[in-house]
Image 1 (cartoon, rainbow, N blue to C red):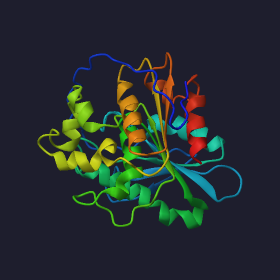
Image 2 (image 1 turned 60 degrees about the vertical axis):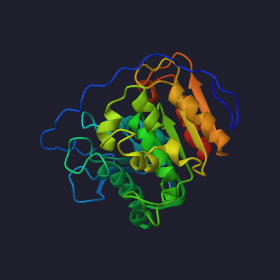
Image 3 (image 1 turned 180 degrees about the vertical axis):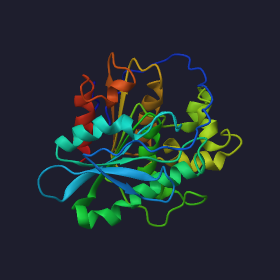
Image 4 (image 1 turned 135 degrees about the vertical axis):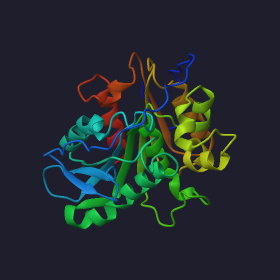
Length: 288
């Protein structure tokens, strides 16, 4: 069910959520094979600091979706998880920037490197825009799971006033879409997601200032439109995180919409062949 900006709350999912397994210790990083349908671009010197740019047919300037994969900020999987999303969006006439980044256990991953990588990758679009006809006035971030947290963070990072994540001139986004996102880091920690403490380098009590600058819930109001999409049957990230963030964003005056999909789980949201995909596509189009 799609709720209009300012609509009523539905679709809460209440259940106990146990801790996730510790992040594995990764071996030497081997980037996935380049996709011949995309242009692979390095935005930094580390092996993980690259993104795949896909351009639609026709002439630009093209709107751009920054796509951020999830997997709980860990190195189990990478941007190959969101390639189908990028291909589907490109078919709708949208350029996509599928971002890889350093993650927990990798050199420079976790706090603050994971966040700085997403910021650098986003700002790197300024260098690509003239050559590839990108419309920097129509840039939206979309992320799944942990990537949902990062996509909303990209939209709100201009409000950070102190600490390691301050950027004096971040690329301003037109909006953000969270797909089953961990949008409130302190709340996720309280629900048993111990991996939050791993990526943040401590608990909310240990490092409160980090949570204040990295959690979208702490940065409200973001000042840009947001759409939260969550399946009612998600058994990985509880839908109550999106529901409660939605209510808080409304109270703070943000333009926000919650789309709760009955009978939908976690990974269907990044499967263009699933019945959940039209809601995801509509969320993106609504912000562009």
